[in-house]
Length: 248
Image (cartoon, rainbow, N blue to C red):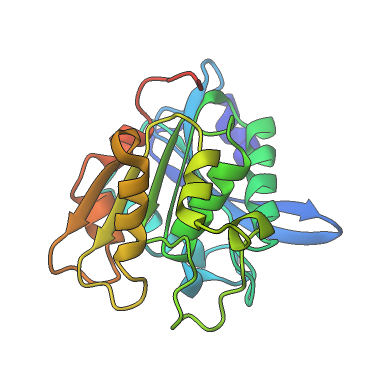
């Protein structure tokens, strides 16, 4: 199916199922090919990390909430390839599963006409936390970063969340340690003021530490589902695929 699409331009945006083999295991993921996609030019791309509720192995659930749902409903239509890895049950983007996310991006970049200077990363909740860690550990990989209701220090009420990389856990001030490792690229942080799952202070603190290096949008009265206004009511999606910006 994908091979046929590469021959002629895609007439309308469409999800295409793919799979990745990593360390002997197979992981399903989805790729959104934008309207007009062909191999005659390089396309910007977005790596999207879903939340804990979309974990699994079906290769579909990760597109049912947030950015994926808006693409399916035609409410956003970016001129970009969007890559949707899926985190296995019981795993977390801040843990070893972050290798799946990067492996999926590697595979998509090899197969598709992606401009590697214009790859952005975003994620929601567990995916927001993963966005912070992956951006810090791959400082030349992403041209823009947008964590939505993510965390740096694990919320106490999220008992099943494993600890992230040792460098973050062992830091005396994890917010400043994370900030010191982030690339000098555009960062836009989102959170709901009334989030009962991930304390809004997680995003507020990162916004304070990053200062002028990041923009912060807080949605008054919004709970944990800050992804709906972030992806649907702001210019975030267009911002993620904006003009290329070199890493400094």
